Length: 149
Image 1 (tube, rainbow, N blue to C red):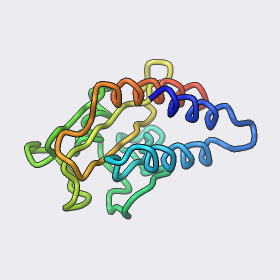
Image 2 (tube, rainbow, N blue to C red):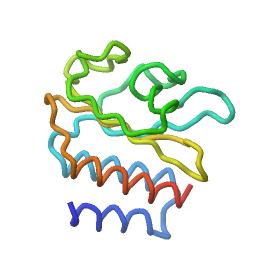
Image 3 (cartoon, rainbow, N blue to C red):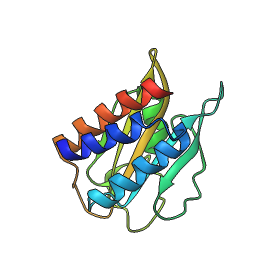
Image 4 (tube, one colour):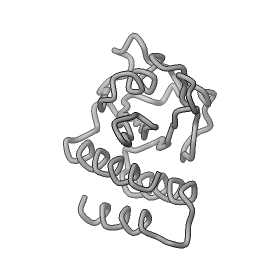
């Protein structure tokens, strides 16, 4: 993971790209480097509205471009402000299905000045693939992203 963190830092620190491009490059890097990350994307709070809007992502197209707070895993994280690891999405009552191939999901909030401004959302086609190292790396990444937002 330390090699991936170095590469993520390099993207975040790049003076040549705006935030949107950096986030897209982060999605591509994670998608290419971690085989069980099958959809990687960002959702951000839509101004003062209690909803999330889809940002940069890599993976299959999704119908979920706007997610109300509380709905689905992403919507729950928008309310709880806590990382949510779902080893088996079919065991979750409040899961929003994006793809029949998705079996697990991890969502990590991006907190800035105590406010949840967005999150990274990762789906996997494998059951229970996410490790403690994945969680720690993604939480570190979201802390770093908050610094450039």
